[in-house]
Image 1 (cartoon, one colour):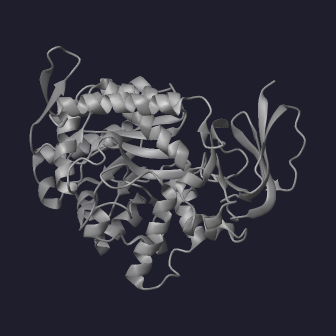
Image 2: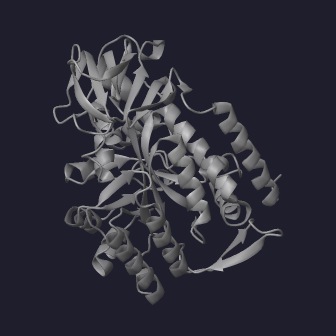
Length: 456
């Protein structure tokens, strides 16, 4: 007989179709799935029950971060500005990182997400200055194994670099280390190997295909066109998400027209300064958007998030974490999204609290084509649940829970994090892992990386 989990006496914010909120309710979980979420006491069950008293807390779906990066956790604080950071991060990813770096960084990244209540995240494997770690499968395997061990839900997007310049990597598995020059097409072959290698291993951790964003002029180059077509075909053949980072200024329309690049399983990050043709292409293809209000691209241009939602485009929130200047705290991003667009329209009524919560939960799940599995506390869905401690000065008085969550809460208010019915954190302490050991391991990987990069 398996053990059920009963969360009781909390304010239940379901994010279901009716957006129901129960002032003193319960969530019953069996075999990793939600059985009931409702008002009052839970129905009787034949299974042995572990109970969590959620008095003074909000019980809600785990947060969904639809755009972030692997690697960035160990490059924070490097460089005096974003341009310097990009240069340093590129050197680190290509020349100074080994499989232990990627495993230690993944564990640290998962730790921060657990502590912030983010149960699902989509991460690009590298990025920043266009250095994707797909010259060989070893780094991705190390990352994936570490994430699976931590228990969070993740989609890791692997893909090629831009074909407009050569990319040299240093392999530290050899002593002395050796240089490897890799082509984007070879990287795509490695991506296919990673997808096949991980298939069926852990349902919480999935693979996607990423591709750099190319302009209309770049798409006229045959090598760029062929690479884009092959990445598109790989994602569709393997039935995985197709993810791009950095659309702007007509690039969506250009890629849709030239390549028919997008479909309902495409997720496009940033999407600033869009043209009317871009928006029409999003509508026509049913591609989804990851809006990143904390990102540097949101400083240089505006994502028309509210306008896209009014046109029926799926719009989710991403942190673009975790460097050079931002964290995995989705509550912070909800608040920043509100201020970002309220300032633009000079109207603080835009993006009301419940809409922000939708963007961080059920709309995030929809952006990842996972709305039937996660994103709300509906019976039958996977039990990805967080408990937010509301009995605190900045979250008082006990009224209007949606407003308090979207306007006043932060990641440090998360008391309990549950993924697939497994309690990962309770009382802000990890259940199955030693936080100090994770920090120490990350510090060791950081210092070795800094030495190899000549930054020590």
